[in-house]
Image (tube, rainbow, N blue to C red):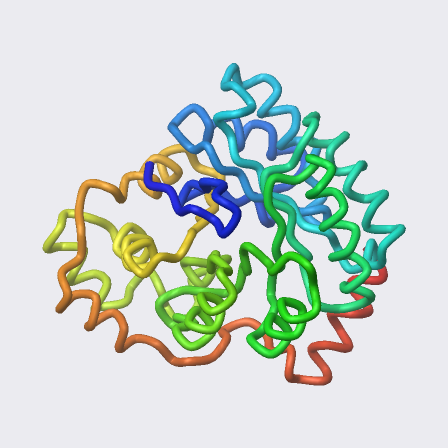
Length: 282
C-alpha cells in the first residue's frame, strides 16, 4: 500500500474501501471481506446508515485499530456546533472506537462553520486524527480555509476520468488540502467500463478498465475509495500497485476530462434545494 501524508503529518492510505450505498445488513460482511484482502482504510458516513456495520467489522477483524484508517462524515441534519459535537460522540460509539482517523463535513449546507468549530475542538481533544470537508467547491473551500483555525486537511469530491478536478486540486494544494475521490468509477456513467481509451491501455498492462482508472488517479496524487460488494472485485481494485502508466498514457486519459460533474452541481438552485430538504429529512 502507498500512503499520502496529510498537512499535520498523519499518513493516510492512498486507496481505501468505500461503503456508500452498502446496505446496513451487508456492511459488516463487506468491510470484513475488504479488510481480509488487504484494505486498511474504510470510508463511511453518518448519512449512509452503516457506521455500526463498519464498527462491528473492524472490532472483529483481528487487525489492530492503529493499523486501520477510518473516515466518516457529519451529515447536514447534524450541522451546527452543538449537534455536530453530539454526532461525533455518536459516530464514535457506532464505530466502537475511541477516535476517528478522518472526519469530514459531508456537504456545505446548514451551519457548517459551527460544525467545523466542533470538529476543531474534537481534533484538539484527540477524538479525531484529521479533519476536512467533502463536496466543497473551490469557492467554499477557500472561504472555510481562510476563516478557520485549522485548514481542511482533506476535501473529498467527485473525481474520475470524466471529471478530473485539476483546477480544484491546484487550489487545494495552496491550502495543504489533500484531494480525495468519491465515485472513481463515475458509478458506471458515460459508459465508463467500456471506454475505449481505458480499455486499450488496460490491454497493454494486463489490467481492467477499473484498475487503469484507479491507477491514473493515484499517479495524480488523488486518494481513492472504490466500492464493491463482491470480494473478487475488491481484490482487483486493490491490485493497482504493480504497474505504472506512462506519460503518454496519462496524457491520453487526461483528454477524457469533460470538466463537469456527471451527478449534480451546487451552483444549480434546484439541486441545492433538493439536497437541503433531503439533508433535513435524514
